[in-house]
Length: 141
Image: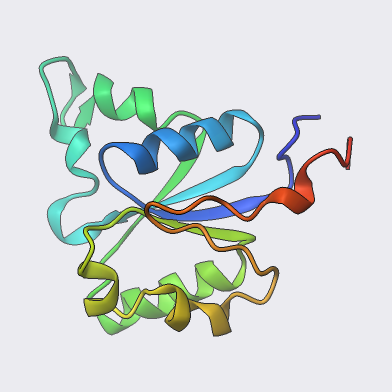
């Protein structure tokens, strides 16, 4: 059994630290659900070359998103916001590495997500450390 098996993480991420961090969490057994921007055809790294595996699928994207599940959601649309709320309600943690002003514009800050997040008190936001210490040293679960 992997150390983070049974942990569900919802991640709104693109490029850089977010995809790398959640790749490591997924490699350690966490179920990572990556939320991609439906309005632009998914994560921009899908189209990042030079090495393409096919249309809308690059080696760069595959390298940073192994072992993850993906869902494309328009977070500005009301049904997209409702879908994200449902995902957050089922998660143990939420990771966000959106540009600094976007979470507030989209109603996706920690304070707006907190009432939806019933399973734990975990907070993982851009530039902050994960509050997953309760998982450390507990052995197999």
